[in-house]
Each structure stands twice: as C-alpha cells, then as structure tokens.
Image 1: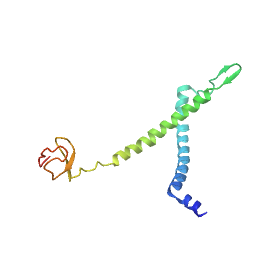
Image 2: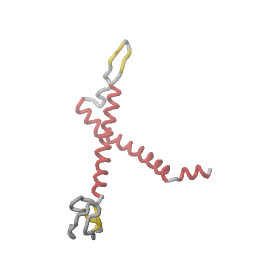
Image 3: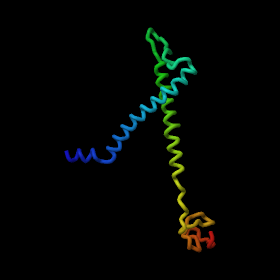
Image 4: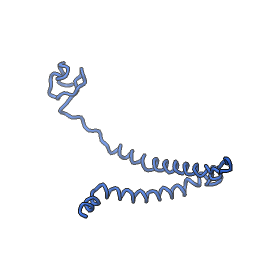
Length: 136
C-alpha cells in the first residue's frame, strides 16, 4: 500500500487528474458555446440546425446514413476551431508577449571575420586567428 500511495501522490498523477476534471468542465463550456452561437448560425445558413442527418444512400438494400458522420465531422471541426481561436491562439499570444529577449552577454562578442563567439576582452579570434578590434 505504501508504494501505491506514493504513486498516487506523485505530481504527474495529480496533475493528470486535475487536467481531466478541468478538461471535462471546459468541454461543457465549449458545447454550450457551440449550441448557443454556432448551431443557430448553421440553422441560418442551411435552414435547420441538423443539416446533414438526412443524407444517405442505398446499396443492395442496405441504407448507409453518412449524414450523421458529416454532422459529427462538422461538429468536431467547429469545436476544434472554437478551442483554437478562443483558447490556443490567445494563450500563445500571451506567452509570446511574456517572453523577453535575453540581453546579450557582455562577456562575449562575435568575431567580425568568422562570426564565432569569443571573449569580449580578446584581441584575436581563437577560431580564425584574425585580429579583433576592441569595439567589435
């Protein structure tokens, strides 16, 4: 039991459990957004919210209802677009804004001849042997 308890209390297991719970809650938010805003838009375009369910064909007396698959595919693409444009894109933008470019290291400089990094106090490049001016 001690090993099982240690396994359960490890950080990655707890993080995974929290992620599943948050994911389920987020799925209900995305579903509500889709049914409140996207489904009415589909109804405006096609005249009904379930535009594809009636599509089917018959082959040797067997009915293939591919309309339900198209409905599921459209729903998936709508949910994926909602998640991308309202979650992934804003988060990526925030992360990019929060990243700051590291200031250049004052203890190194680039050799103007071979562009290798050399100590700032060096007067000659260790890689190509060329003299390096003090301000380079």
